[in-house]
Amino acid sequence: MTRIIILAAGKGTRMNSELPKTLVPLKNRPMIKYLLDSVTATGIDPGPLIVVSPDNKEIISRELTDYSVGYAVQDRPLGTGQAVSCVEDFLSEEIKNVLVLYGDHPFFRSESIRKFILTKPESLAMMTVKLPDFDDWRRNFYHWGRIIRDEKGQIIKITEFKDASEEERAITEVNPAVMCFNRDWLFKNLKRIKNDNKSQEYYLTDLVKIAFEEGFVIGSVAVGPQEAMGINSPEELKIAESLL
Image 1: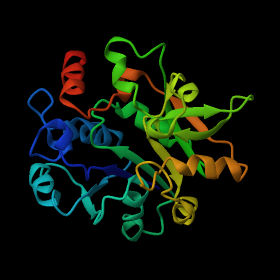
Image 2: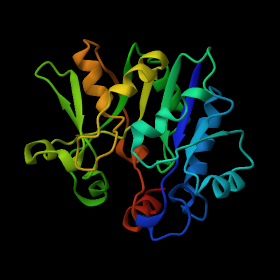
Image 3: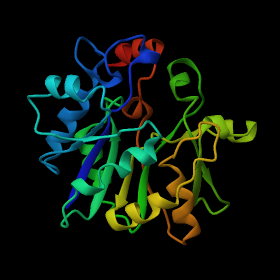
């Protein structure tokens, strides 16, 4: 059985909004509702878990009364790795896999989510996005983490943009941060993540390097850039509305 986790603890500061980021309207509708519609349509998880902050739990839960969801609270904003660690106590024993999505990625289709869950990884699998360039509307992806592969084409790690070299920033295969984990492997290895990076956060993406170093082949499913697009600024919101 797979549990779907949606990270939604972010504030709307960069969106110039007093609302939590995932409630910022996209075509007059909170962006997280588009994602929840797709998650619900998969029929895989009858009650996905939404990770919220103490400040936005009440307002998000009021907005989502039409959905069957649960909530876990991220008490401290220490990064995506720490956010996912907050759900461990909410998972029953029959949960074997954990799929992590983001509430500010409204365009994922139910078919893509369903296909991705079928990977059933021994450690983790991830979605990827391959771009021809970062021109026009694709500039939305420029500040995403880069997928690093070895000479055999195997994924070996993710480098976040802030920590990337100029050579790595030239890579056009980027990380939408959607991952499916083996539940036991995930919570064992979350404890190994360090925050020795420029943001001093615990990156969930650091688990990719850990899996590779343990000898796992990291599976991947490619999705189109329009489907994987996230929204982190008013400019990106305008681009997303033009493509909706």
